[in-house]
Amino acid sequence: MQTEARIPNGRVEHRKPLDIYVNKMINGVPHLARTRNISRQGIYLHRLLEPRTPAQARIALEFVLPGTDEVLWLDAEIVHGRNTRKGVGLRFVDLNPRDEALLCGYLDESDAA
Image (cartoon, rainbow, N blue to C red):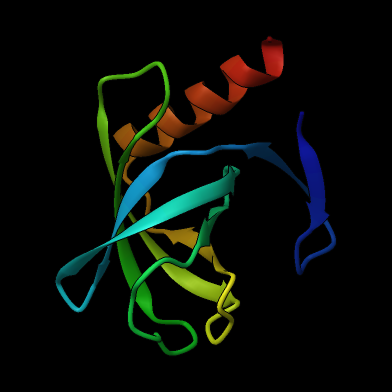
């Protein structure tokens, strides 16, 4: 089941539920995080055990999407939730063409199902 959310420019963003673990690199140190949902623009992560990070901090993420064998390395920045205990919303930045194609392929395949 997909959900929708308005993003700052008023467009509707389709989010796909996603429950996997990811490596979230903070200051070069990996921290385990669990996802809640993903879209073409970003991802929401539940906080586990990790230090607080400042607003707009750049975070590197490492994960494998379900049904694939390809490791994605994505850069993202914090857009909301930086001081909450529950989770943090991240916006992808500077996606390389390979990772963007894998992400879009995963989301498009999910839409067709």
